[in-house]
Image 1 (cartoon, one colour):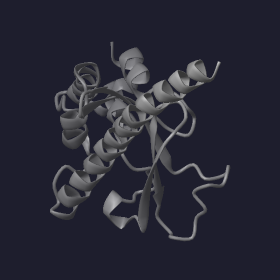
Image 2: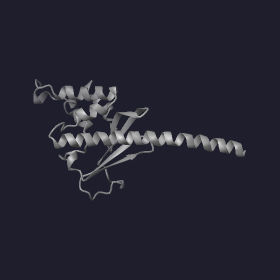
Image 3: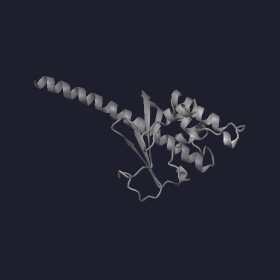
Length: 172
């Protein structure tokens, strides 16, 4: 009995660092993406954040970003011909609208959630309680990791809908 318990404890201990490391890599991936975006925004570049997101995305999310961007860039389209897809690129914004850029945020907090996603909570006022159930200025990211490298596979806003699925639905 004691031997079995000892073996089980060893197994749990051996897996815990791997899970923690994966969580750190996931969190750092999202944090690095936001830091890159803020640096570019301050220089007046990548204001819609699509280039930075594309860099950190897996192939499937890159395809959805490209699909949303394609219709938006069609300058031949008349305003009355716009479809839902024309504005679908906004599903991939890293900040929560209201006309504010990420560089205006007082703080951005990152947290690994129990479902394996990483939450980026954006506090524009510095007074919001990001732990409140009423706080909705956040984006959750699902990531797939291989070794010490992670790619973002999808984004979820406070309403929990998949940005990738929405874009694929309205743009195909």
